[in-house]
Length: 135
Image (cartoon, rainbow, N blue to C red; front, side, top):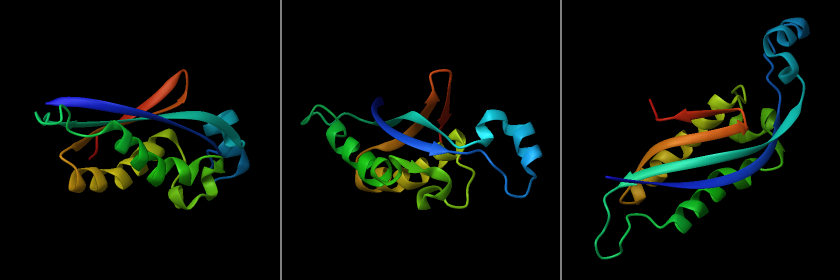
């Protein structure tokens, strides 16, 4: 089994905020992140598969890039995630961005290519990231 990874970038703002709580409670739990702020996010999408001997690979990384851009980056780049349909109904935490990306990409990759989605890694800041491997 071979694993390949494609990195894509997007810029987006968000706010960690639970509307069921008071402003004080949100500030207590989420600190500065309870205010609107933005990040230069990085998303790494890793797929796995067996190398096709005729082509020398199992999935074209350029094609993987196009899928990520079409299905995720172009929909959320330079937006406010709290109001973006891509994240609607979810707290736009790094964890939920990764899970949502998985939900979108997994059926496309697994059903249309000789590959299986392995991991979504989302880097929100240089100091923290999330890796999601599906359910």
